[in-house]
Length: 214
Image (tube, rainbow, N blue to C red; front, side):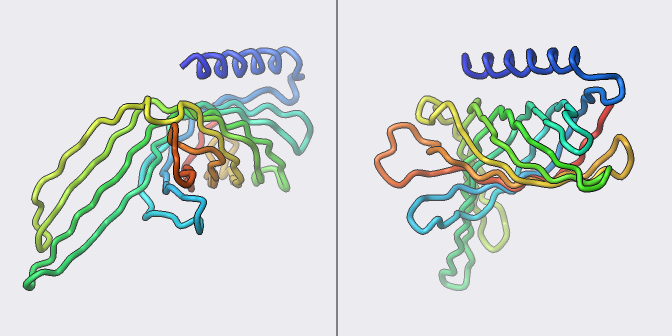
């Protein structure tokens, strides 16, 4: 949590400095964004991903122009990460399905460097800093498509590394001066588990959504 507060303080200071130094012809723009996550967890050995889990992301951003075609965009988002495993067994003509998912909630602070090829279209890349705030396992089962119930278990975040680092690449297109479609892939670079004696497990996520500039 101290790292989160420090990160937000640095971001706020950067935005304040940017507002003071930018000219009126290229002002800092603030906005909100939200969208869908397609998240998975990968291991070093073979980089095999578990089945992807659908989640969401939402938060705020500031777009800071530093040249006619180049800008820096810091963001603060809530991002639902993790993975899902589904198994099916057919026994005596009955189909038994079980689905378990690990749901990891992070406050993420992406810092994207954006280059505009045309006024409304950009490519971006940059680091993402994450801080875990929640961890849950969900389990549900069904027989022949009929639900047998579900269960949610809260996990201790002390078993996870509090800090998560990733590298993102993406693109965006603004239909108007204010409304745009965004897409980004973030590959994790740090192990999500603390004191992990096996292969490192990393967050990976593809994000797509809408952004609105004020």
